[in-house]
Length: 214
Image (cartoon, rainbow, N blue to C red; front, side, top):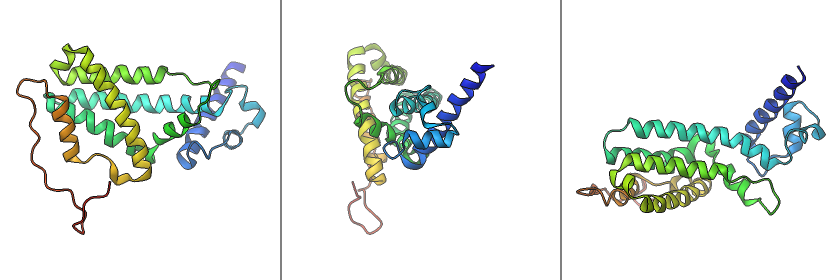
């Protein structure tokens, strides 16, 4: 019975944290606020989590794995290499940064505060890289065969994803548009038989006719 109570409290902490991170962001959320929202004392929260960073990664890991799982389903449901690669790149670089009011930007905030001795566990990043590698292999036969190139593209995607999280927070209009995504698709499928030609795109302009904001 005491164990059930403890799990209930832990879940209350995680639910309170998720709500506060959505409302206020990682930096502006405090352990005092989390404890109050969860209905426990400030001191009691440290019986379950040693630091705000640990709380965040418990919340974020569950959220992020669900989003990547949905992306994998979208990629596998697409037919043909261009369609699968397009689904992967759009989902990763456009859709996920926008989800839940840009919730993923909290990851950037959290990582910016990490210092030596903090309870940071890189296992989620490793999991993410493995899922990206699998989706790339499923999207192009040449990438399934060439593990070295696939690993380089995983590195590129992780770096680009991080940049999209930051850029969306600063300027939501800066995420890749259709033309940019097609350039990525063409580059990633360059080793496929026949390659993938980029369809012509009109110049990106704002309604006033000026160049689109970046």
